[in-house]
Amino acid sequence: MAVKQVGLTILAAGLLVIPAARAASPEVAAAETSLSLNVSGMHTQYHENLQVGDDESGYTPGAGVGISALIPYGYETDLYSSLAFELNAGPIDYNGHYQAGQPLMATDNAVFNRIEARVGVGLPLVDGAEAIPFLAGGYQAWNRNVDSKTTIDGGEFYHTFLFGGGFKLDQPVGPAVVLSFTGEFMGLAGGNVQNNGIGFGRGMGVTAEELISLGIDYAITPRWHTFGSIYWEHFDYSGTHPEYFADGYAYEPLSTTTQFGVDAGVGYSFNE
Image (cartoon, rainbow, N blue to C red; front, side, top):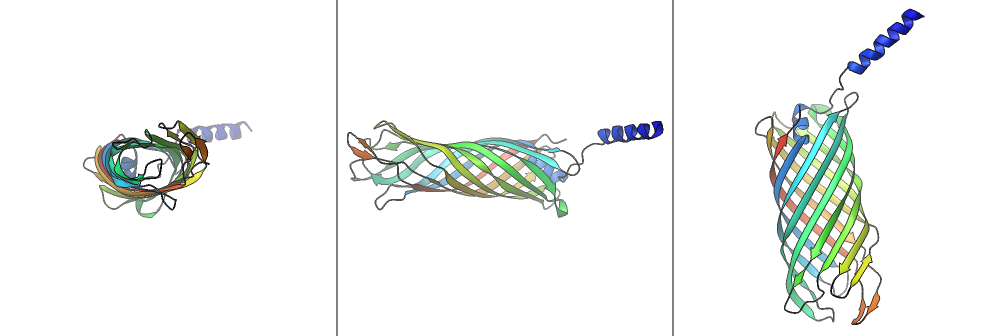
């Protein structure tokens, strides 16, 4: 009995000192375990779902910062985490109406920002590829400031929390190049629209957001990388119920936003 106990103790101690086997190939691990900075350009198309509604469209430059990591855990499994922030700002075309209903062509000096955190697991596939299902959460906002000789609303601020998940696939295609595909499905919850001109501020219901992106990472050195990506994103704001103000009834209608963007940047890999 004593010999058996000693054997089990030695076996347990041996398992504790065996290092976790990383699922990711060296190329994927280096690309995903990094600190990054990027510049970007984004096209926005906004439409209010009304017979006579407002439309906005245009390009805005931007910049972002991010950090992500793949940490070995267990047998051929990685823990995945990331945090990214993106800011885009600039003038876009406004084709809409005054509060009283008269048509108006103007400029929206728009500011968009978005922050997103992810946690997931990395699982090995063939040829060094890695599948990464993840959960995600975050926050996004749009500061809408229509510039005209007669202020139409005093500015509006849309913002909402994000929750959901997605899937990322990393595929090395050489000793220094990794291609990636990401698909996300998020819920917009806890959203609010604030109109400063008439003191209107109300919450909005839960709606959906979809995002698809394609990326490429190139290792200049084992530490320094360049990368680029393109993405397509679609989401709706649910709107609010009509309410009576001094100038009549006001409400936020259901709207649809589609954004397409590209970014490029540099990353520093702290993968061991």
